[in-house]
Structures are given as structure tokens and as C-alpha cells.
Image 1 (tube, rainbow, N blue to C red):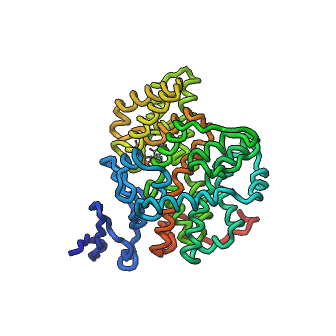
Image 2: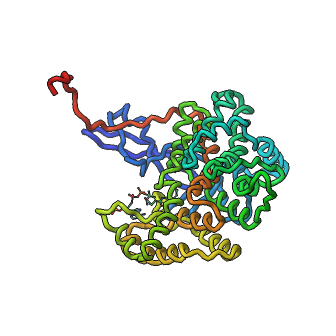
Image 3: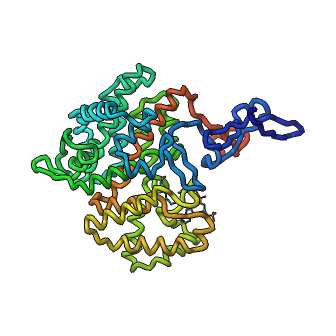
Length: 428
Ligand code: CMC
């Protein structure tokens, strides 16, 4: 028998159906409440609001669980590859050998971008942040593939757009870096795997051979897996809500990249390294910065600490921390910023303020350290996050479209002036 909750308001009672998920999460389905009682719900930042029912990613913040399509993130990070995880997220099942081969071949076939994209790229000043460039270039793909503008075309057409964006994002991401460096772009080499190809396009030169370090490529692949989806986070919700107006996948992902850019979301990985650098330059006094983070009159926060849903630990952070240690050892990197990170972590984890609020290092605290060790420049960190998150955005967009979800359009409680008469400018 399905459960209901009861709302009592103004002398009347209302039945609210309870929706149960496969992992026993329960939600009040309030979609009829306004029609029946005149009430809406208010939840700034959607802290306690489910925006959809999804079968992609399960996350339990209290217990530190993260699973893609039922598979534990720990297993996937250790045993799978980013391309296999992308297939899993987007199509719902792990691929067979044949399916994986076909998926890889289709991606490889589309890694080139139209030559005219280069002239768009040339229009950006070299100081342009690569996230802004990437978001613009992804949006510009609608101009080269006008059929993608209609997401209601055939399934094959939509699937073609999915393959194209997976294939082209590494090229566009690497090229956004080349623009920053004012270096000539490097074209994709389709004999290389996804991450090696990206690294060659980013760090190589068109005139020289470039050997990809397998340690770097493997570490990057793991990082991308860990970032591949995270259910209804800020950027995934953005992708879904933009797509809910039947905007194209390219437009929706472009918006997702913009949402990810902010320092409270994906931009935190860049902000972490900048913060650690600032502490180092300031003499390495960690307790001064911990005190600043606790001071409510100071807007400073410890970047890379805290999470909207993880209040005990972020399982991705646990895996990344181990990977960071391994990569640094394998590459023989000694980084003074890493020592500051370790000390900061130690102090904050024992501090009553952080303990009481469930503030632990999140995925971005360690990912910045690995990216730095891999030689990736700081303002490209969030671009790396975008590369990883792409399959998640695609899967969220596809699910939303396939379930024919209605346009996303929250309500509000208006708190402004009530009606007032227009006053002529001379009398104001
Ligand atoms: N440093 C100091 N205090 C903090 C921090 C922090 N990093 N994060 C939260 N708090 C405090 C906050 O001031 C509040 O205190 P009080 O209860 O006394 O008012 C309490 O902890 C709860 O914080 P909140 O802002 O209400 O929590 P939220 O769920 O709205 O925000 C967050 C989550 C991730 C935006 C926040 O923890 C934060 O700003 N962290 C730093 C940025 C960061 O690392 N972001 C990456 C998130 S993980 C990657 C991703 O998924 O994008």
C-alpha cells in the first residue's frame, strides 16, 4: 500500500503521497499541494527538494556512498575506464566487448572539429579563462550541426549529437588552453586513447613528436571517472533545466559548463590551489587561515572543504587522496603546496568548528593537487572537471528528455512592494 503524509493547514487536512526510491529514500510528492491548498513549498538552494526521479546515480551523503547505475565508485575507479563509465552512465548498462569497441570507434571518428572553430577561438584574447572559451565553443557547435537544435528529432540524430560532444570536448578543451598559450593547435591522433589524445593535444606541438606519460594518462582517466556524475548537483540541474525547454544538448552542456565554473562548485579545484599558494606566500601560517574561515565576519572559506550532501566524508576524496599519493611518488614530485594541504587537513579535521558542521575535504581538495602534479595549469583545473562530468550531463539530459519531463519552472514567494502608482520623473 502506498504511504501518504498529512498536512494540516487552516483547519483542513491534505493527503500528500510519499514516493519511495529503490534505496528507501522517501519524498513528499507536493505537486498537487498548491492546487488543493494554495500553498507552495519554499526551499532556497533546493537543500531539501528532489527535482526528479532518476536511475543514474545513487548517493548517500551520510554514509559516503556513491554509485553509478548501481556500481560502486570504488570498483569503477579501480577496474573500469572512463569511456566504459561514460557508456554505463549514458546507456544504463556496462557495455559488452562489441558495444565498447563500437562506442570507441564512433567517438574516435568525430574528434575533429570544424576548421572554422579555429577562427572563433582566435577571436578570444589570450587572457580569456578557458572555461568561458569552452562554454562558448560548445555552444558554437549548434552552428555547425544545426540539426542538433531540435532534440525531438530521431533517436539516431540525438545519439549522433551525444557521440559528437563526447568526441569533441577534449579537442575543444585542449584548444582553449592552446589559445591561452598562443600556441598552434594540435589535431587529434585517433590511435590514442581518450585521455592520451587529450594530453597530446594539450601539451604537444604540431611540429614535434609527443610521448604521453602512461602514469599521467592513467591518473587522468581515474580522475575523470570520479567526476563523471554526481546526481542533481548545480551543473547537472542546470543542464536538465536548460534542456527541459527543449534546448539542444550543446546549448544545455554549454550552460552546465558555466554553472560548473563557479568556485562553490567545480571552480573550487582552482580555488584550492590558489588558497594553498596564498597561505604559502603569506609565510605558511595555517592556523591564521583556519581562524579566518571560522570568523563569520570574514567571507573567507576553506576551499575544498564541505559539501552540500556529504557530511561525513566524500568517497571520491578518499580515492583521490590515495591516487594523489601514488601519482606524486611515481612522478617523483615534491610540492611544498602539498605539505601545506596535509597540515591544513590535519588541523581542520580536529577543529571543533569543522567537526560540528561536518566539513571534510571534498573531491576538489585533492584533485587540484593531482592536476598540479600532472603539469596541468591552474586555470585548466575546472576544464578537467568539465571533461569528466560530461557523460553525467549527457546522461541527465537524455534521461530528462526520454522521460518527457516538463519544463523546469520553480515558483517564488514574492516579498517586494505591493501595487503602487507610477510617479512621474519630475516628482521623484
Ligand atoms: N569553510 C568554512 N566554513 C564553511 C565551509 C568552508 N569551506 N563550508 C561550509 N561552512 C560553514 C558555513 O559557514 C555554515 O556555517 P553556519 O552553520 O555557522 O552558518 C555551515 O558550514 C554550513 O554551510 P552552508 O554554506 O550552509 O552549506 P552548503 O551546503 O550550502 O554549502 C558548499 C556547501 C560546498 C558550497 C560549502 O561547503 C563551501 O562553500 N565549500 C567551499 C567550496 C568548495 O569546496 N566547493 C566544492 C564542492 S565539491 C565539488 C562539487 O561537487 O562541485
